[in-house]
Length: 596
Image 1 (cartoon, rainbow, N blue to C red):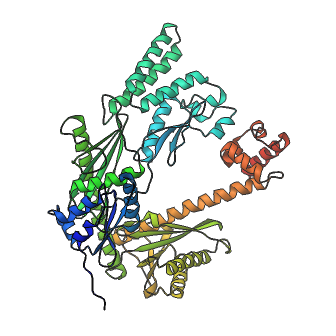
Image 2: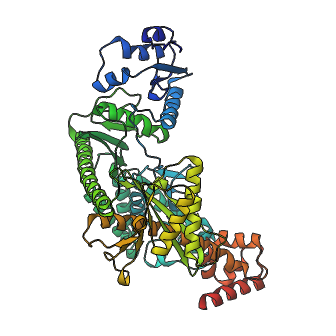
Image 3: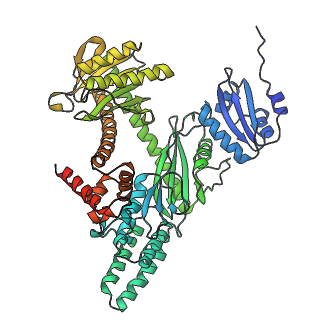
């Protein structure tokens, strides 16, 4: 038996270079305990073993280190990228992890001759201007609606804009000046765009000053209707200024970050201020933060958050940090108010999570007791089938684990090669595909499978799982009660060949209803999308003379089948490859099919 070689930190540090890089602390089994970056590997790694350890958490980690690995890099920036990639792939036990894979949304002003306002998420195009990021999609949409009310800029896609012959409803309700039909010239529209961008930059006073000048000038030459338009814009902007939650002397872009730790739960709250306005906040709950202090948690958040997000000009934090991100810690004034607000948000988020956790624990415990399930039962997967008269059948699988819905683990299945409307065959197919793959890939096996259906579907589920060797998985059917009334569901317990009806107020039933309803929602969304796609294709396929290229040109020109249906014959005939007679046939076919 080979002798065990113990880790000698002094010898290891002695062989390290004075270069930037990444270090990995490994446990006895080679598992990653911690990944860190360093400006100087020798100094940074040596600091763990040459001085008093800063926290009990780090002290505990160092007792488990059996070996270390390092990777030298060309720069500290390169080390930061490598560190983040390794943290994501290895999920080290002692790294504080923030799981937030969603990109942040932006408000976009396009580079078109008549620019449009739009919602944007993802890669950016230099032709357009972007404002943000915003913490939530609704914050972007709220800003777009405000700008529509005040400046009446268009929001339609360019394909729709290019093919309109008359103004749309937005023009009628005074939310758009209808540049698509020439109701406004390029120069005054460009002025509205310029004012909107000044507003987004936080320069409301400049915008209001401009509008007041135009209002007075219009009044002097007795253009009272135009003066009234400017007056209404000034009033709308003044109301916005009056209700701003956070206001600054000049439009500043800032992120405010604070951390609260209570009852072993750490929470970071990020408040976003864009153009001097509070546009929303978001709370983050990191993994592996047990025993960490607020500065350590915030530093980990900033390093991970700004790797893929541009940092604003000002990052305000509640703690002095050892971080590569430049931050400012205010002691008084407006910025101190921002920090206190973020800290309060974090405390409120923790309190809400504690309440939610208590509720979920109670529901799960009640469900275990009611169904006679083992104490360790945690993971529930629920299946539902959705179709319209057998058309475009879609099955959903949603996952409840660790006391919450795990949306990243949801799956949809397009059901094919079955008799339309055969729900039993659809259930057999989705379960076979789902758990055949779980078996093959060594995936997570649920403790409980919920089936939205009665004894027949439960029988199918039992047969499929037993054929796959998953005898340990409990199966429960959720049959709708009389008149499909919530609270009257019948639970079909497969293992005991019996049914059970819980009281409408039973916490376990509430959990089942929540999971079942989520599976139903997820299936319907998928079914509608599949059905719409199929019908779009079939509607145009039925028209003689319409091939793949012409069909694609029509859909692109009018932004979808609905746009083609609402287009006039003259507009359809303008599309490349569409003659006047063919445009008449398309118009006639779509309107006759809509009337059927």
